Length: 559
Image (cartoon, rainbow, N blue to C red; front, side):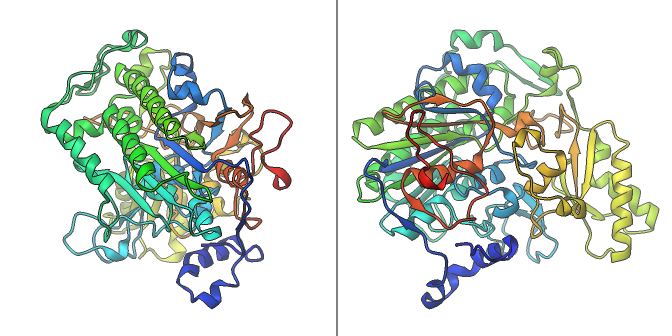
């Protein structure tokens, strides 16, 4: 999984995909990675992603944190980090954190995309599935990193020294797999009523023990969480269509596994499993550093199900702060020299019904005319084509595809007409063709100044991207109608979805705050330098950040 500098970027990515399958003699010619661990390097890298933890939410609650978040704010604080690409979803965001590459190069352009060459099952392909292992009639999928085109930090570490341990745990499979990568020693994620692992692997004793603890909680149920004083002003019901949210306190009925998943209990269980894996795998105790990737998913489930400004989110963040504090205290007790980075896969936006009450009257839900179905009906009639599936998408924004049987000479006309129709909608900001995006140079400079086309370029990969991209206006939520569990979302190219905090911490480090923008793709090169990992030039889109707030320089000569 290693890139050759002299190749074009795209050709190199393809090489990276097939390299592990080559015989040993061929792999010997691959670019070398080496590691000379500094005497003061941390023995364990803990990389934490909090799903939907926006920079706005971090700023809103920062003064109230007293636990794990409060500890991290004593380190190197970058409050204006950027998931700089346009497709601000879970899978693309997680793919940037430990690869140091944008979705254009990771190949993970969205949570899902349309692949009309698929012969078994639906044409919608999930970012963390192995399509080759689909079976007719099955509604399930085989979780895999098959679509990830570049290596993660853990893979680089194991390439330099196979003794390094690469472990990942998450509330979602895509969180664990995109941060862990292909060569991963242990990986777990929540599914159904328990934590599971990759097909063909058996859960270890640690995961079995954790699942037994969860089963006992589910069997009994649990009461509501207390409402902290700071949450009381948000503790009121707000209607979104037929759904009422805003005053939930996460009472858990016996047997309600979905209620467990969409509450602070999931994050607590994920962190508990992570600590158990530290013991099981003896992380941080070897001659070379290990990496533990932890993706915490409950904030995202709460954000989607109840929005970002109700009592539910307030309770979730205060409980997560306590859980992180306990997690770090557990590592402290084990005497491990560890370094932490905490960030998010994307930001988030509250539901428009509450935003309208709180000074943002222009917030709205997207209208039906933006859907692929509406476009297909109009353009099918215009061109005398079968309307069903003429234009395909996986939602009312993002990538859209034309049916493959459309003649080449007609495809451009249909894209132009679709763009013209969409631009008459009050919900649409712009429409960009794949050709226009591909012709846009890969952006450089501060991510906050990138144009919409540049943001789209950072998400574009010809293997998976659509024929055109639809971007909704600022404040337009890509959910036509609220429903239970799904009243708010993210995924836009706007900064409320792109901006995330990036926090580094290690005991005794010279902390500082840097308000200028950085990117999540800067995390992997910064961590690599921290542990003396020498990776071939050109392997990262990001740059090394100096994490020493004093006269030292953690980037050394590679900054």
